[in-house]
Length: 219
Length: 229
Image 1 (tube, rainbow over the protein chains, first blue to last red):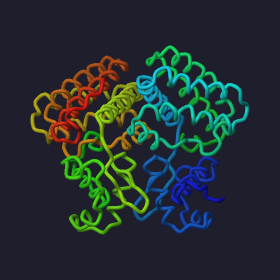
Image 2 (cartoon, rainbow over the protein chains, first blue to last red):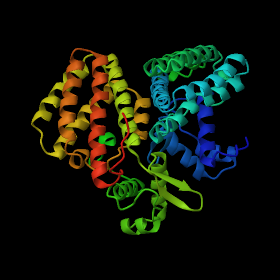
Image 3 (spheres, rainbow over the protein chains, first blue to last red):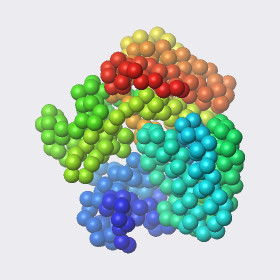
Image 4 (tube, chains in turn red, blue):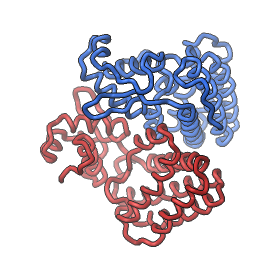
């Protein structure tokens, strides 16, 4: 693995550990092997330690003094809560953005939405989806929204629509519904559509986690 | 929880957390103005700690939107505006609203049993210290009934805008909180999740009005600024 240019070593180590958890290589309750991870990535232990502090804040691991970091169990409620929060916060961002920009926002989002509808490539869809979401978040001009979203690191590390193929359809339909509300400058409905899309997304991710056996130890 | 509305609770803190609170305090007291460079050496010296925990504090504060770290240049105090304060409390209201919905769905009766006592004690509490403890107990009860680590993550990210005892620094907030929590508890007693959630949102929006007023008074926000809600 080569660190990507914009990730710090700590970010990189965190992503690596989340990947190990998602792949079922680090099961709930297991102690995170810090030395091994440092060695695999060619880092010192310091960025691994930083990564664990960040992961604890995000709820992935629990650090016990003098004992190490242990992987937390994840359950279907946790996954659903994650997407519920994303739906609420993105919906809020969109209402703020609509108020600031109105029709100009509809136009910019519409251009992205059209490209989303047209693509079958999971990587392109993810890229466009990120852009769709960040357009409203940026237009909202709200540092607090960014703070919360930054804390809600993705549950699925790596290419989302490749890992959760059923999510592509949810995304496209959801974005189409959001666009209908945005074009009517209907802030309340826009927020509701974000929430609805994210809830459906959560259901699809629950299915994938279930199929991967990631809930087993949490039962 | 004290991690939410403020933090005058007795918890063991690392020197990084101490440094973070100290810096927040300097910002809130107007000693570090928006745009100012954070004097890391002075702070380390004032607290009798090394620069490493000060550095940790700044990383945490950057995540919280309080400062911006510029490579090789240092950390600079972010500019806070009224909309930022209002967004903060709107987000609080939404996330707590979600927590109380989950709590009603997941707690199976335990919640209805414990909130009325807290609300009754709130009616007679007049000192900011005990008042804050009761408020924290109320929010803690809701959060633990919600059983949601993700909600806790989101709330931790939204660390308080007001350092120290919220009710000490924002006196008008006690009345708002007392009325708000009474309404939320009543909705929970009816198992009215929507009513409880909108109770949280309304209460937090009113608190935002109070905080904006205090920030204006202290010069943390410019006095003439107006944002349409």
